[in-house]
Length: 237
Image (cartoon, rainbow, N blue to C red):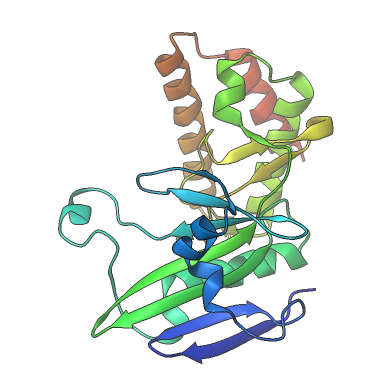
């Protein structure tokens, strides 16, 4: 069970799991602190860049929110402040807490922070790393995706949609494959809960386009048989 707690820390507001922590800690979001203590396991750059952080009993993922597209050239990582509970980090943290309660295969939220700078804010989120997983996109490149995994991917996407989870970036990069054919979905920035509607079909179509794009990038053919397995599992639940 995740217990929400919100705390004000100077210009920042932090949301965290009070069931695990007695209070918030600024070091949770401090890249310099982790690097100084040799706790950075891996880092990526660019939009969606993350740090993998070694903790005493688990690994965390720290992600700083960046804008994409043309807007990023003007305001790389700032957003308009419209209220504490409407910032991107809090929205994603609360959605992940809800998904955890529903026992859906998504990351467990640790903490999130929004730092105000006048009418704007910057934000970060920390989640628990799902261990021993690899992106579906990399496994497609390695041609190591089994029929059972394709079926489970379709079933997983159906479960998220059945619970009204509209993930705006359903791609092969955001589906993770784990041991024993386990599958997970990550990166819920701007995702939301919705009533049934055409958004679900749009999400599945987006996922198919992503699979075709990965095939194009790797110089392989789109696996129509694998896609039928996904569609069949998604439709027949």
